[in-house]
Image (spheres, rainbow over the protein chains, first blue to last red):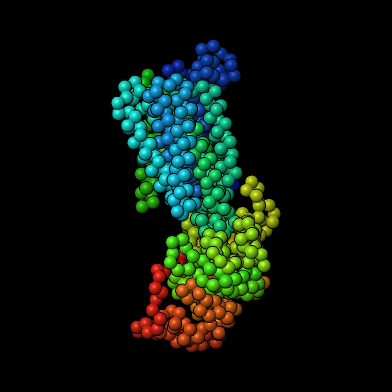
Length: 325
Length: 273
């Protein structure tokens, strides 16, 4: 990131300030100094509990969620050579939703729902891969895209069937989950997601140059000695797994993976190493900000996080469509 | 040196071979051109070389080694390919784009080393693109874009370069510049293999011309041997005369006005991809 390093430093500062605000604001309002003190374990016990047990894990989870979705989206857009691609395209969201809804409908313990969502997402991605693999023109990004969309449509149909006769409690639980939320975040949850996001992110950043080459098309990739088929498959797989982990942790938070890579590019990131790292930073900032809005806009009610990111994301999406003509 | 030996390529589900029993050698220090009408199999040969459409029989060798036993990386270190199409889905800076040419020379996890920077600097100087270095690919004109792509192929190193229609979008000056550059590379010892529609330019620059027709070699040899009126009329299915270009005396083709009076177009669908 030799060009415009200042902008990235500024983005990092914005994230830091947003995080500090997010820890300080809420039903109990704390000054930045009180926040820092409580983080260090000083001050009154209530503030320390609010900061360390309730708000910090929540902000950490929001950050990881945004970073994971941002990196996943940046990588998938590159591999698919499609600026409108996003992590939920390969059936991740649909599969996860089916898993979660099944778990809710069966009356599973709340702790089991994320596991079911993760399993659902992995199954959906696997099915999408198998469909694409069976089709001719293997390695064609469009075939995989189609397969993902079709698996997603199937999953949506399954959800509607599952919810058709569901009781209001199940309905409400499933709906809340499908709109995404980081409320009730714990350090354990954050640590679990951190494992996926850091490992997956490191792999994607390591493959950034291959993604640059895949973005040129398959013939050009072959000319540069890259096995396009295999390289794109592993990027798809890792990016989808990172997205699946975020979905398991916080439900469906739309548009982050779509919007954030474009912001990173407009901030001057050219090659994918910069786009992926920049997307992690901006994604984290966007979700922390969205969660702050979701939590504080209409107290004591809490808005669904996925809806807030979408409200910010949709206008940007439309703008992009216009720019692409 | 790139050698095609009795190469046959067929697309899945196709009734005919896209390329049938094609043999020729593109050797170092020479510019070899492949020409022929649309659908004659020119681009298929490039895709076979890229490993995208492996021959169903015959073989392609690079310095005597069968392409089938070389890894894609080994091939890319010896042969740089400028493909016909390349999609730039995102605005990439020219410097980052050039750096991709060094991809075959390093592991996935390594940054650029002195040898990479040197190769890129050399390629930039050869292709004359220094003024474009701080631009983004999506702001370049067609001519500039093509020169940057050739520079990327030069940065790739190796002693063979394959180009599929490299001058399609270029005006006369840029086209001549590109041919002069390729001619210089051949003189300096590179094997240059060029797919081109520009028969008259090819006749002036190429040392060897392979004329394809319906996937077969219709004629091959020096441009003087190949560019004969009756051969070209049959292959292109259009009346023409071959004259001499007044500047350098190379054979030059002039298509005539009027109806086609020789061979009908190929009976199977064109497949020039």
